[in-house]
Length: 433
Ligand code: NAP
Image (tube, rainbow, N blue to C red; front, side, top):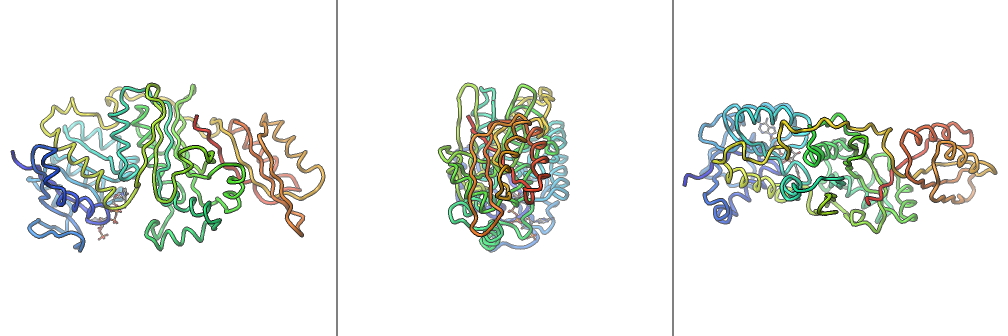
């Protein structure tokens, strides 16, 4: 049988990892697919010493790859959303299948790209876009397809998890750990996407669509990063039996779908609380299977390349299948996607951890608990500590589940009190039951 011909665009971390897996495991891959997969061409602005391209066509213009009539599958591994989108659309127009690791591209432009791919009868595979090496897309889209998915929760940004893990294990400050993460190459020079939650929101958007059969709605995902979490928050949470994790949460409720990414307190007893360092994990609760957990490397050239090459293999296996019989891009038939309402954060109900600084005077605590009570918020526990030589002391309150709207009102009233200094830190709490 003719080999399947692949063109790789971008030879950076993921491009070189994918390149080397395709070369190193070529024999094993052929045994799996029933035909060989060869790298026909590479599009890269510069050479990468980690990749021996001897005997492979190399072009400096990635569009040469998308326009090459010999290529069956284009690997978009350049990142970004403008040139990458143009590249993917060009490949689709030319009748080529696409494999991408680009979460931003899929989360923000996936609806349009999938529609065009359907019209042209080609596949866009994107396993590597969520949680790097963990096959969570395949798991949700195929392995769990018998289930009505109730919720999923994921630690899906390795950089953020590394920072929070270091803060927790060593009591270090956020800025200090971020600087180390940058030095280690875990965080970009501009870490905004990681620490402000945008990267995780892209991934959660994709997971939620596949879990619930809804269109991709990145703009409706509530996004909050970890940059305002302090070493003190982490230490207090630890005292109360919780880890602070940056969690992506998607849940069906009676009134709609929750789609949110934010720092979250999770009991130390829960498996997700023990996912540390740069590792990723996604928990999915299906109505038939119950809770499932996948865990592994969420980034890096070889782990992410593992997902890219698995997609290449999947596409190669189904090249000759009738397009109507392929697994749909978003797991559900395109004309069966539902328009279920995505809830605003104000409508969501969960527990809260509040950390504030108050004047150590009689009656202050009573006033604060009165404000909480008048907003229908019940308290689970309180910690108040002395601070030697200071009139200002920290006060930490854990609440039972309450609507965010009520909590907003209570926090506004508490912050207006003359005996409360600065703002009230709020971190949501999930029991993941
Ligand atoms: P990277 O190391 O920066 O590699 C990107 C490569 O693409 C670079 O070699 C870059 O060349 C090249 N490139 C960019 N624009 C180009 C253009 N217009 N023409 C030709 N080449 C171009 O990035 P990466 O980490 O591999 O990430 C690639 C994609 O994978 C992104 O979408 C990312 O979100 C996703 N991803 C990455 C990881 C990970 O662990 N790194 C994990 C999961 C998903 P120059 O060097 O010349 O700029």
